[in-house]
Image 1 (cartoon, each protein chain N blue to C red):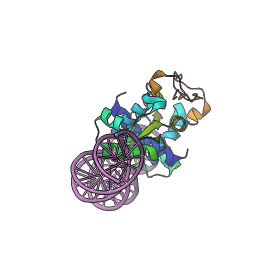
Image 2 (image 1 turned 180 degrees about the vertical axis):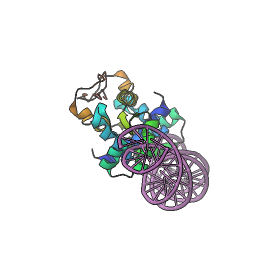
Image 3 (image 1 turned 45 degrees about the vertical axis):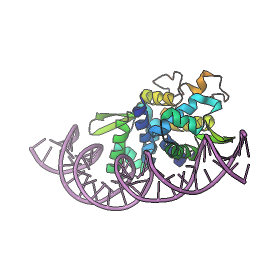
Image 4 (image 1 turned 30 degrees about the horizontal axis):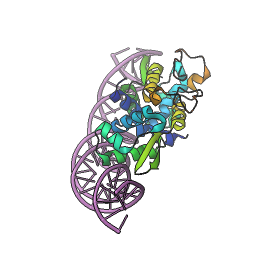
Length: 108
Length: 108
DNA sequence: CCAATATTTCCATTATTGTGGAAATCATGG
DNA sequence: CCATGATTTCCACAATAATGGAAATATTGG
């Protein structure tokens, strides 16, 4: 992952509608969600949601698969892990970390 | 962490200058960096950098401490861990994850 | 207290982003 | 092959964010 991809992914998440949609997709896991379902859940007009789903897709955070009349969106979990790793790369120059990592990745 | 705090933190990271500054601070670890050092390292004018450091500070991602003439900025690592956790909360409804978490936190 | 250095604020300009109504496209069931 | 439901594109407006020059504000060493 290069810097501009990271910025794009972070920008995709840095917006209320998109963050809510993304988190709903995280919870839904492998089964994913359709735009209609997300639109209903969040109370956002379909066209507005479509705009935001496109942002998430372009950022590589979610994938789409057409299933009959619907399109199912899913989080790209591997990509997400790469992004999180990018944020914490070379933490503390490799020195021992002051704050113990709990259930999260090492971040000093 | 509530949604608006998460959006603010993600927006703070979703910008080239700020992301580079943040990652430099991650590497510097506990010792932190001064605006002057970051400004030199990134080749960004001091006033522009100051603007971006303020954004990172307001987002709660970094702290500042005056040491003599300088101000030392440091990553707030605990806060950062909370943010990363927020992004992956209730992943997959608790079902077993398809993709094994490697060195990162569980993200399916 | 003054000179020097570090950092921030002010300000105006430019560029980007979010929003939703209306219309278009797409895929399928009958 | 047409009616229906799902999703996306088009468009224009309003709001927000990034930039850097110039000036202002600390803080300290001498």
